[in-house]
Length: 258
Length: 342
Image 1: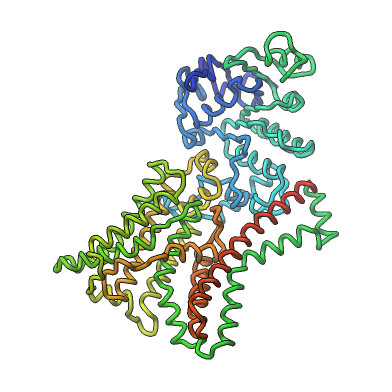
Image 2: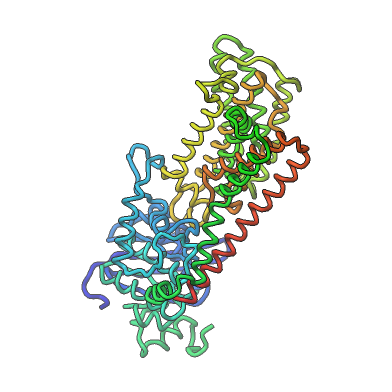
């Protein structure tokens, strides 16, 4: 499925980021194609989270550039990232326990009007509920009660709500940080299905995962980071598994992943 | 996952979730039940309780507290606390009486001065918390609790300054037909607060910031401005309470409102708001205030000592907060059940 001639949605080149004395990103370049699932792999401290934070607007890079559909952009804030069509599912999900799926889907972008009132406009609950039902239906999210607060949901259901939010609103790029780490097998399966479905609809996905099984199942390509550098790229499969692991840990310690 | 759940639902009907759900629902209507129970008890205990005059009296008595509680609710919704409102109430009555003292145009400015004083202290609280990066709202509002009281005493030379314009007196003690004006003020303010809490995007953001500040930030909600706004609102509420108090006493009253901040916080908590933030309603806060008023009034009618009233309030606060803790525990149980089924 990879490289089927579709355009590049995202190009990152020469990205650098320092935090005080530590260099989180030295020189990272990668590209993401339309409708592609790209796995971002690397050991702890390899720079994955920093890269994600830059792409989702939480941090700004010290150098290098980010292009979206060929155009150079400074993302800079989470609002800007969302406006550019980039949605992120954080490891902690960033869900609001005191709201239901509808409230969580539309958090910060509630349907409201009239526009001249800005954030003091009236929310349109009906429209939001209708749209949320469509999302839940289209993405086949399994929820016992779509109006219950997410505080009443299981880990898998919460994960599904967070993923559905990102996939439904991520017009271009969805970034998922360890989306299956806290889930059982069946729940993981549901999330992986959501990811492939999103890709089929033309959304590009960046997947961070420690789980090579997941990566082999859904990712078209894998990019490996080590110590803030992009050190390799592979098509994940049984054959390339060992090589990927050795890229991640460096040297030939392919059987000794930390 | 869904098929497993639905099979259970169909077979059981008495699944553990069912019981938990019921318990959660009871907790949600708990404050209203307590109020209803109190009303029944007081009605049986005293023939004077359920009379128009007495109820109107209760409503007027609690009007300033109701304003404070509505303001406090929004602060508590974002996980904060506003300890300054009792002192701010007093400061507002004093600045109002100063404006009255200017004469002429000053008379017309009394009400704006009262309200703006409250909002100004509220803004200061918000700025100190957010821009001053204070660790918790407790600190800046504890500071203004002292400073506003000191300023009120200083500006008034430590004594009540009698005299308020007619319109302020009406706000505090007048009647429109059979309805006391302070009650009308409270109802109007509560209505606006309800619209904000349930209908406006800004209100949604207040709840979401209270639910999870970090998530709100990452989803692009202007967390700092939301937090500052609730303190301004609480200041405005203290101004309204000050307006009513100044009208009723016909004075700038530097020692007014002492410990009212604690009463307002208690009322909000009794009314079912969560001290952890993110949960609570305007209706609940009003119910909490009425519980206060009914206990106060009923025990007065029954000639029970004020000491017992204080103890009763203390007990109810503990019960209310414990209910919130139990709610969280039950939700966790519920979640585990959902997880094990899925």
